Amino acid sequence: MTTGLGWPEVAKPAVTRVGWPGTTEVGGHGSQPAPERSVSRETSVPATAAIAAALSEVSRETISESEPALDAEEPTAAPASAPRDWPLPRRTRVLTVANQKGGVGKTTSTVNLAAALALHGLRVLVIDLDPQGNASTAFNLDHQASVPSVYDVLIGDRALNDIVVAVPDISNLWCAPATIDLAGAEIELVSMVARESRLRRALATVSHSVDYVLIDCPPSLGLLTLNAMVAASEVLIPIQCEFYALEGLSQLLANITLVKDHLNPELRVSTILLTMYDARTRLADQVAAEVRDHFGELVLGSVIPRSVRISEAPGFGQTVMTFDPASRGARAYEAAAYDLAQRG
Ligand SMILES: Nc1ncnc2c1ncn2[C@@H]1O[C@H](COP(=O)(O)OP(=O)(O)O)[C@@H](O)[C@H]1O
Ligand SMILES: [Mg+2]
Image 1 (cartoon, rainbow, N blue to C red):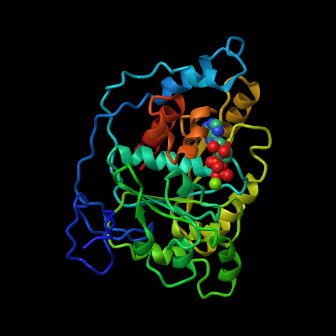
Image 2 (cartoon, rainbow, N blue to C red; image 1 turned 180 degrees about the vertical axis):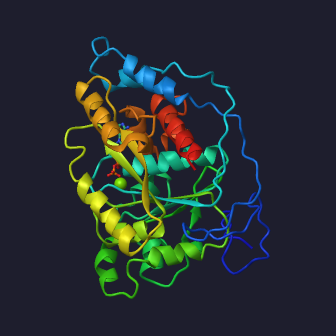
């Protein structure tokens, strides 16, 4: 028996998993290899280099100041039908999307990367760890206070399997929603036993295999983000191509080092994603160059452009991947997800 949404209940191993072929533990630590499985190879991913080239070719003089002009600008990408190889990770990859600055594109990147991976046949679980529940909103999921949520898992005794719901219209994609209750969790966790590893423990009880777990963090370095870092083996840091982009990064990196040294030796910054790149400004180039200088190969080749379509999508309860798959923003996220998968 399943929850009706394709998310099998825990402790019921005799489940008939329609489109859910394997049963392995989720978790950055000690996960078993994913079962043999083929992923659809027919995709329309623009080459990373092509995107970068297209972005740099955009003439600063000829583009009008209105943002739609940016969206109208299509990169000269690889042919839409070019087959691509989206590899399965050898074991579940658990990525924490963190940056204590607000508004840098954590949620936008989490939901769009997750959607892009899922649309290419990879199984993805998103954990919404921000009390604002923006990832839940983008997936068009109920997240008013009464909905069973991550709060009930972290503070109560609910199993993660019980609260996970399927994301409408995108197969292979599930989400553990957040409600406003989670705002109290930062304080309630303080007095709890093993307060920093409650998410990790919850994740270890998930009774079937997913290829990716993406955790969308709140804009702080409190106990929620700490739980995410203890549960993950990789950190993905979105960096906005704006002034002050690098401010606070050293504090974030210092925290990651502390977690690695004391709580989770597997943790590493695996990925930096440049977001909200505005080809009309020299500043964006400067920030991007500085970030590449500093973080080298950790920085994904694909850069996410500032795009009206990306910012409009959540208002329609959608990711840009389904809202406007042909837009520059969607294609950039698809290319970034492809890069991410290649690095698995
Ligand atoms: N590439 C982009 N182009 C335009 N707007 C964006 C882009 N990425 C994010 N936004 C918008 O910026 C705001 C902050 O993004 P969000 O992902 O919520 O940041 P965070 O989760 O880090 O607080 C949102 O309104 C979002 O729609
Ligand atoms: Mg957010």
